[in-house]
Image 1 (spheres, rainbow, N blue to C red):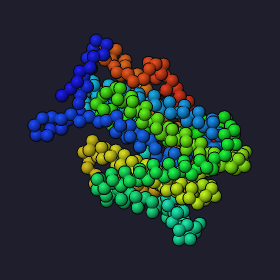
Image 2 (image 1 turned 180 degrees about the vertical axis):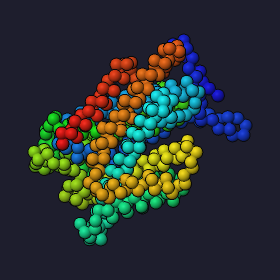
Image 3 (image 1 turned 60 degrees about the vertical axis):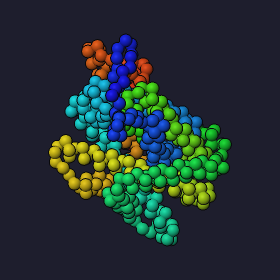
Image 4 (image 1 turned 30 degrees about the vertical axis):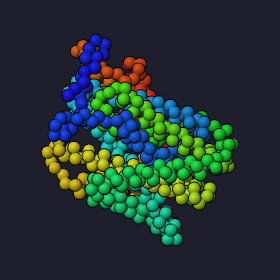
Length: 436
């Protein structure tokens, strides 16, 4: 079954991908805007939110708020661009679904696919290193505090325990069990986040809103990019909504807008809860300081510290689950393509043990891993590659006099701006690496 849409006197065929036969007839059951919106929002709200206060602290609430909104606008355009590229590939190839890496290969060939695959691997491994190191640290701190062995056990126990515990659950658990478990964890994250806003709002000091350091705001961009990155699920949304441009655009805007509101509220509450003296000392010394550590220690109240601990750990776990499965699927796809079937245990070992080892060697790698991921992988996967694919698709459609469905305005000017911003961020990060 298909639906024919008219666009500029030409016909666009959209395939129905959700058909079920009940014995008598085919029933059309398309995905909903609400479900796709929830998928994007759930993917966006993860462990990246934990790093925001540390990187936005030196600049202050107002400058960081403006930059968060600016980065959201960029990621919104890039998300819509990925949807646009995916939609047009599906239309040209007559496919009902396609993944991001397959889209890259069909548009840019094997070279482009290898570059995207490398960036994809780097991003997933870097984030797993960050999540394992931070999750292990919180888990160890909590357990040692309960049994009265604080600052006695080595950090590697935390990273190893976190990896083996939750990695083992993913390896041994059935798919339906993991889905239910993850849903329960997400519910805990949402509940604890609302509790944090309620408790933390009472700690906010109005004087914090007056502090502004615009020169320091650039250092927060990479982590903000990671926190607002959801683009790996955009092709899934296009498939679920069957190429309906209106629904796709609405899902991406609302689905990314909800986390934006959460991040802005979180940023204001956490930064507003830090005393002016600590903020001033940190900005003068230039040292890396995580304001969450003050709240986690219970200095702002034991209940607030407990709720923050629960939120932090379960936000990391939900992100950890998603990225582990993402890498497992990636290696399974490679094994199918090369016709060298790899069993489940070696794949999970390849996914879990390298980031666990690096997290054990360097337990404080959380912010570094997020920083590198935001600049290199996100800029390539979310900015440069989608813009180049769209450019090539549009040129091809002109030559064949075909139909190109666009989700973002501005034409080539928008694509040039997206590539320029991504390259500028990468160059800035490379120069800062050599400067240090």
